[in-house]
Length: 107
Image (cartoon, rainbow, N blue to C red; front, side, top):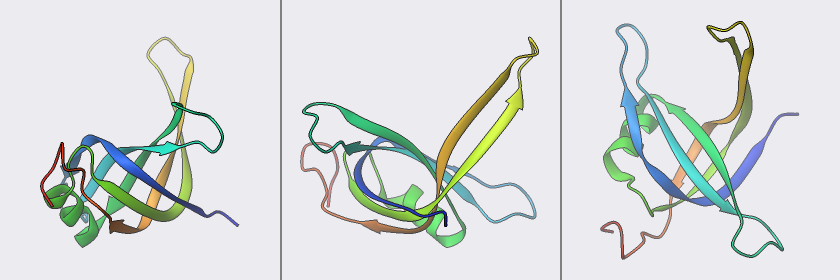
């Protein structure tokens, strides 16, 4: 089973990408509070697709709280120097917009 669910705040404005023949995609980064560790957040990259990607790009800004439900994905690539770089990220199947941060974005 591969399932990830979390609530966090957007730390980087979403970036929408549209490539011919493919559904639009959107990437964003969120900070999730870690249980029991004060001041230390976990940061996650999130990708979403289709109409949900367009809505995220249109309505989410830094500071906005979101709930994400999705799955973890893994990418690995070879760099120019021959070493390997990898990343784990969340592929969002569902994004819910929660309370807006009054200091950074409008409701």
